[in-house]
Length: 514
Ligand SMILES: [Zn+2]
Image (tube, rainbow, N blue to C red):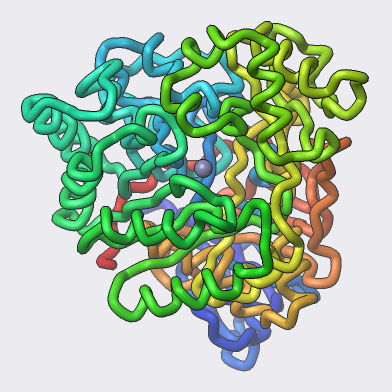
């Protein structure tokens, strides 16, 4: 047998992701897996037969696990996953918010409409129809970061009952359940709901419960973009989700309150009570601005009628509805508007008729406009970051610095370092912060994470003092500060602050008992 290829990360501050206290020690990597984690006091006198990497003065931690992102298509376009690796993410979970890149139901163009909001690289080839085919493409397309996939309810529904409004026929419901079952068979780690997006928004309760029943039966995860994050509707939206979920394990995606009213602590307390009887957790990102489709700012009855119907209202009515939506013009920045590229990065506040300009932008782009909206409060974000069962998820995407077809929210590049910095400032301990950026999320979906013998060697080596985001709305495509080395499946994808060009990322299927 050829000798094993070994790397020894020496004398680092080992934070293994369990939440246990850090210790100074060595992490030995052999053939892609962690072979041993050895406290300095137990280091063998003979040393290790391995390539040595001095980690003294640095934290050696599990690579970060981004439980909520939208790289379904972009990770194929940008296989070096620069926006992910430079912030220490080694595994991304895609297929969120009801939107996954499969199944297409044989209607790829129709699915492209369903998932338009995550489709920022429209030229990306999509050589698949079923979820199994999609996962096979992900598995065989080299990438710097690992990936695990949820199947989106909206995508599965499109495949089972394209164009259907509220009520599915019994045959369509059976077909939808079969799509979800097939996706979980193929290796998806759960199902996502997008209760604020078409078609999930108009799905009947019994349909959503039938999907949740499959999730419960398969012991996978039901992740949900709630129906409404507005502070006045948030508790009801959570109650709706937990009722839908039944016995399914639940993940409240990107937990936050828009139009904050100071009641977020009560919402968290309510979730805390629900957790006593239900397997429920949440993820959050450290920003007060969200990123969504411009259509989402319109009243729910307009959204529910679909983009084509919204456009028939005409620019004047649309301008009126946007004006009445309750936002200030300077809270909004246009992030995607392919037909009017000059609008990208602009706030309507820069125009003499802000709402008219925004409505015209919507019409000119056939409703395919994304916006960032300054919609939450910093105090609420801090509360979520201080909550032990809330893990970190970016809601971002794998991008390169050269990405031009949309303006990325800085969360795509900076979520984990920004969350780390803020959590530490709020008094969250180093082991707890690391756990909530890695193992705690991995446990929700049953993929491996942690510095333990036998696990895949997904490792980040960072400076505890320097780790921070440099991404801003003005200049989002910035590598984070303080990330020195990143290993994925034992291979360095970043060394001494520079990309190595290696693409050792793999598809992760659910393999660990939950
Ligand atoms: Zn979402």
